Amino acid sequence: MPDGVDDRTRHAQGMAVRREVLGDEHVDRAIERTTRFTELFQDFITRYAWGEVWSSEGVSRQTRSMLTLAILAAQGCEEEFAMHVRAARRNGVPPEHIREVLMHVAIYAGVPRANRAFAIANTILEQEQSG
Image (cartoon, rainbow, N blue to C red):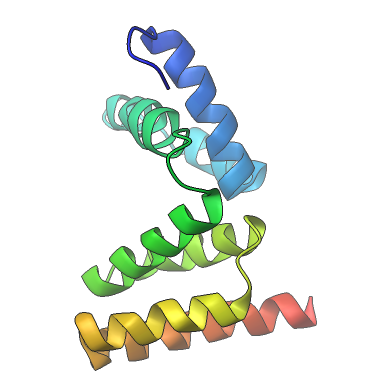
């Protein structure tokens, strides 16, 4: 998104992208759980994570999804990783590419982190196939 875009426009763009990537159901749940304590954080991630970074045309959404998976797996952020496996599939990332990302994680971030990420991704991919 270009410089000089106001926060309201950035938020609207971020919400649109957030819904496209994560799905309406997930975003609606996040909005419903927003409290006075968390509302500034929700606004922040909508404007900057989704309205700036995910809205950027610098790389494709598939590439962005794979980068996100690698970072979350390497950090051991299991809930966020699971959410972004679903998002990656929604963005058209094939299971084979997710596997390659996790192989990279094994080499550069450690086998235990990759092992856990493989288990999480496998469960989600199996649910996808059976559902």
